[in-house]
Image (cartoon, rainbow, N blue to C red; front, side):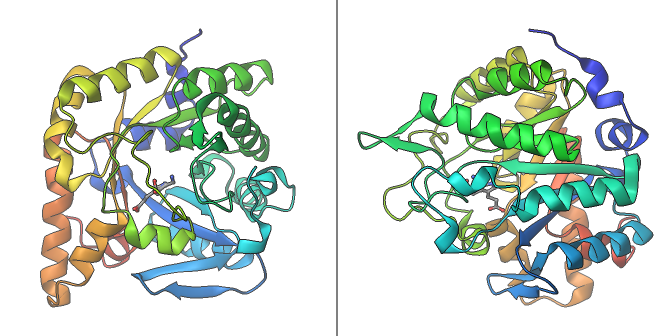
Length: 324
Ligand code: PBG
């Protein structure tokens, strides 16, 4: 396994994301990409966050660029009728995610960092993160599916594959396939420490990705598990070739962020998840108070050792010039 530290250094934008001390440089804005034209619909559970078709997404990211947002994470959202048990639509050339990545790359070159979520839960009709075999989520039947999506994203020009599925060994297999297909410069942001949290609810509404039955506890981490389990997941992913380590959720696991950031040599990202966002947005405070809350939260992430912050608050904070 070739570990390539140069992946995180290979463009000025990637260097800013991974190594700058500025909060603005560290922030990543999530987006929900849908099919169609001229679609720009607010997501009920997440005020200020929209479902957008590719045309609107490009315009939004152009406006974001003018204001100074450089890092973007894309989530595909599918209509129910395009889903099946095998997640077949995930490799369709028509998937708006792939079109979004290639259009953004064409428009911006290396001036932005593009990350794409890779998981099966958006594509399967049962809403699970993998392929179901004999009643269980099959780790080893799922990995080839994830590889296919990762290769499509790489082909479209993504900077980082954001692997959020939590299957064992997928970083290694994705890295291997990327290398074999000459995508040596495509990075992997691994959701290494991802808890089976109850704070993902608004996102699952937004992504239309709730499991129709059961839960995600056989692959996402037990919320009671301690630092040893977190360190095990991080060590494995680093050995397998992860370029960025993600911890998720962020606010309620800051102790884990601290513990991991002290010992890992890789950039650490935190995901300030939808349930955490919804708490702040529904706190009924004035905008002035929200500005203070968001600064306080971002400083807590930085103090804990986070290098990268994925947050739905990114746009509001940067557009209003709140980060001082
Ligand atoms: C996909 C995925 C989820 C989130 C990010 N990627 C949902 C889940 O694991 O159920 C949650 C993000 C958020 O709550 O903001 N697996």
